[in-house]
Length: 227
Image (tube, rainbow, N blue to C red; front, side, top):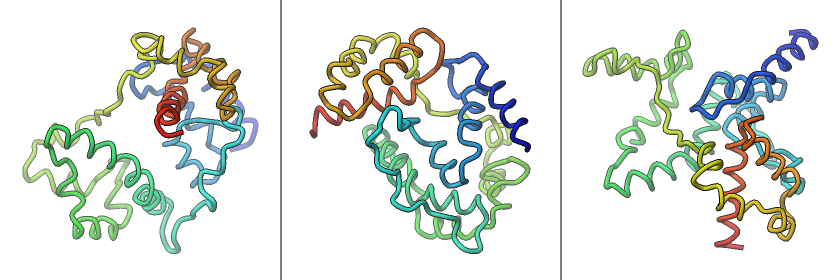
């Protein structure tokens, strides 16, 4: 697309009113246009990232010493999935899911992490993974033997929690304590003025910065325990 068209699209999307509801179209579009002109690997990592910009964390090292690229002979989808497999899946999702489910004595990972199943899944061409915008295509086709289609093909239900509301409501005092300018300045890691601007914009309803603010809150708890 010509540059002027991209700029017009970006301006239109950025004018969309913010929402604190779960994974809205506004949220998805803003995340998409924000990183649309970056290389695909950086785009993919940013999609799952926290949104902590250099303005917030000026001393941050690069997310990876060398940005990976799609393995030779693989399309971008396969490369993105391999990147997930080596990072986001292993170091994020599986860790959290294991802790949450095993607390209730539920083994959520089996059988999908069986070695033979994993090897088979990694060997599949992309058109068996995604077809006509239907993700997990081959898995869903296989499940038709046992499950009704309205279960298999229903809209995905995320596991998100109401962080945006917590920051403004039940956790307001705790967030204020953790993100106080004096505390942040003493640590010397984050730009206190920028963090508090984000918090003000979030609470006034001008923007939804829940993802970035929550990452900073978790960093504060980590520092309290380990620093």
